[in-house]
Length: 120
Image (cartoon, rainbow, N blue to C red):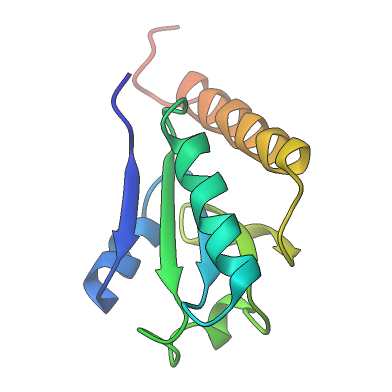
């Protein structure tokens, strides 16, 4: 299984992540200890997942995050086709993180099954 782990470093990278059918976006800051722990946990989760999981350092693109509802770090956003479906403020526990990854995988599978790519 190929990891879909991305570190966002530009507005273009962020736009690509937001346009994925399903993406978990972790937002943190280099100066925040909890963000650094969260970054490592999120990266580990991405190695066993087939959904897009991305990381964004708030200080790299601070201006574009207000429209996503990012008001604190760390934060995890579940994004589907450019729309924020769920937010988790603060560093989620490992079990919460695994549940969010599993939930995103189910949504991605449901979207795929309902798409026009499948024959009736």
